[in-house]
Amino acid sequence: MGEPRDSLALSNLLICHESESCLNEQQQDDDDDETKIERSDEQQKPHCFATIGDDDEDYVAELVRKENRRFDDDDDKPTKTTSSLDRLIAIDWILATRTRFGFQHQTAYIAISYLDLFLHKRFIGLQKDESWAIRLLSVASLSLAAKMEERVVPGLSQYPQDQDFVFKPDVIRKTELLILSTLDWKMSLITPFHYLNYFLAKISPDRNQSVSKELVLLRSSESLLALTKEISVTDNRQYVVAAATTLLASSTSSDIRLTREEMGNKFGSVSWWTSNENDNVYSCYERMQEIEERKHMTPPELAVPGPVVGSGSGAKRRLSFDDSDQPSSSSPDAKRMRRL
Image (cartoon, rainbow, N blue to C red; front, side):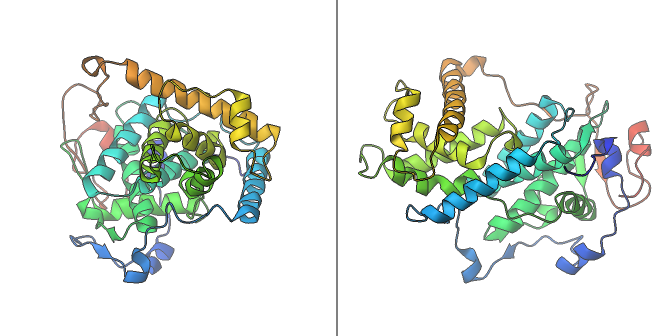
């Protein structure tokens, strides 16, 4: 059983008085920092596809056991969370910013994971005209993920602002601290990206060169990010998502749809594979097939545009969030905000 979650609006949760002493130990004050942080050569090696190889059978089996145990023991799942539209707005901003900075796909996935885990651990709902709160949480989640994964990390002041929201670095840092404390500082996550090479080797020991390994990895990366818009990261075991994604990305045609038995045969060389794994992966595989079919069936001119993050009132306004007791906006909602 986990700790009871706070039943609070997200805005009230972010208006907190957490001590930032532990965060200050980790990073210097950079309120006006416009520079990027560049890691040393040893730290610059990307690892999203190279962590687990096809010969790490015992290691993968242990990871799977631990993940199953955590998933089964988590009986404190929330019955209320932020709305699907609010979450979609957050994910769209994270994905757009990933593209702008040239971040790895895994960085965006981890940022969305931090977001989902944070929401999973607390009962949170947005009140009217509080879309600033989900944006602030998005910025902090992506900033933390970039610090964990990227070679070059933008300064907090470099994250894109718009005419609706402006967050000062101190505000973002304190929201980072709130996420860190909520997740118990457990920021090194196992994601589906870590399993991709492993499953690719298992299902294609003698690879069909008509679909290159690089293309499969790229397809897998794009499918994983697309899947985050459909389901929460906390809804599935990560190895299950990885196995289903690899199957889908390895297909030579979108018309090919494996049966449950055919999928089981694909993973026949996996020593720890059971009927439970087969059922879970097949369920996820079918869900991803449906997502792909909808994507191909929707004409571009009919595609729903990404949500526009605004004030919610129809009239645009600029909310500037800094570390002072009085926010710059004169709106009633902004006046309720105290020092973060």
